[in-house]
Length: 174
Image 1 (cartoon, one colour):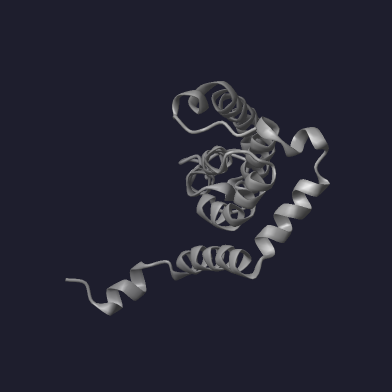
Image 2 (cartoon, rainbow, N blue to C red; image 1 turned 90 degrees about the vertical axis):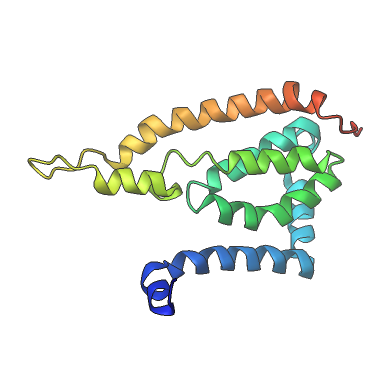
């Protein structure tokens, strides 16, 4: 049985606070109308060809995939979800298509150390046992992670445009 002292010493409450703040921001944006305003503004700023159909899906995945390298994937989706869903409605794109692109691309945190705990662990623990020299640099993450992220985007876009959408049974909106 766990007592409160064990919980206080073993739980990283700063991480809990980060997720709670991201969720609160998303809920606040949704209920105040801020998400709809941001969606209107963002769709209005896009060139006409980017504000419709598959191009909106690609744009959302680019935005999410870039943001997730600077913050956690859960926080990225919690913050962007309430914004991109009205964007899909405004652009007459099926909401699930844009939502899945946002969710999937939130796992593309490959090119910065802070994007995911895996990167931070590899960076922090990656030292030569004899010399103590760091084995990975921040540039290594950019050098190898950026091509992986670009490849992941290409696979997602191909899959979104030609793949799952045709087989999910959802109606096509025009």
